[in-house]
Image 1 (cartoon, rainbow, N blue to C red):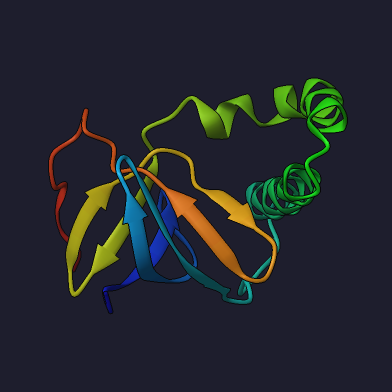
Image 2 (image 1 turned 30 degrees about the horizontal axis):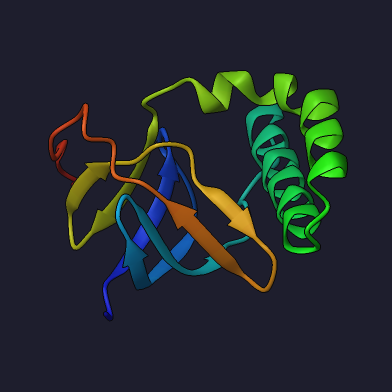
Length: 125
């Protein structure tokens, strides 16, 4: 699989996603972030979520489920606005498709699911 996408939260581009594999309903790939042109409260919040997600993945990869549960219980609530939204999407050559909140992983990896509650959102100008 060589599908390449641009990852967005609303109109904020976060980076490039390269689809590598899938195991329904999850898709897996590489994530290469881009530098933000300017720092805003929202871009800072997104960067904190990415750091949280990577740290949570590290705990899960270590097989430390109790520590992961504790870490998630202490931190996840601050990201509910990002988790409970349809504002995430991937773009590929102008086509826009909704996804559920992605999980960012160690080693520049990412996991996502298509948001089956949405249809392709249209084209990007």
